[in-house]
Structures are given as C-alpha cells and as structure tokens.
Length: 120
Image (cartoon, rainbow, N blue to C red; front, side, top):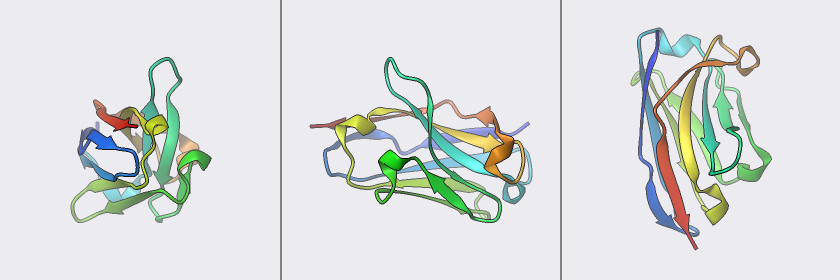
C-alpha cells in the first residue's frame, strides 16, 4: 500500500507560480507512474499531468506550456510546477500513484489533496 502526502498549495494571484510536491512511501517509487489530478467545485476530477516510470509525460491541454511534472526517485517525490496560473486553475489538487509503470494502467492510490486558489 502506497502512502502519498501532498504539499505546496496555497493562494496566489493570476500569473503567479506554485510548486506542488507529493512524497510517496510504501513501495518502489521508481517503478510506477505518477500523476496529478484536480477537482474544482461542481466539476469532475480531471487529469492534469502524468509521468511514467520512464519519464514520459503528458498534460491536459489546458495546462500545456504552463505546468511541468517531474519526479525525483532519490527523494520518492513527484512535483508539479505551475506557472502563469489562472483563476480557472483553482481546485483541489490530488497526487495519484499508478497501478503500473505507465498511465494506461490507471491510478489506484490517492493523496489527501491540497487546495490551490488563484485570485483574479
């Protein structure tokens, strides 16, 4: 069973930046895909970014060019660098651990979430 702990959320103005971190424990971090999802009030949870064990990445169209996902196997941590933030990025952001090395196998473990609020 993998445990995930997110940090780094907060309140930022439009155009600002935040970096989210997700520390994982409980299994071999480097062998699995990781992802960041978000859920805004009244909306479904959506994939924001994902990274495979081989460092392939993918992004939601709405964040391409602004957000970057990365992982540090030595620290068992995945990051989401968010730049040029917009009010529509406001949501609870969740870290997720993949069931396998790629994102096609889905995500089976979730963190508690961290709030990101972007003021206009």
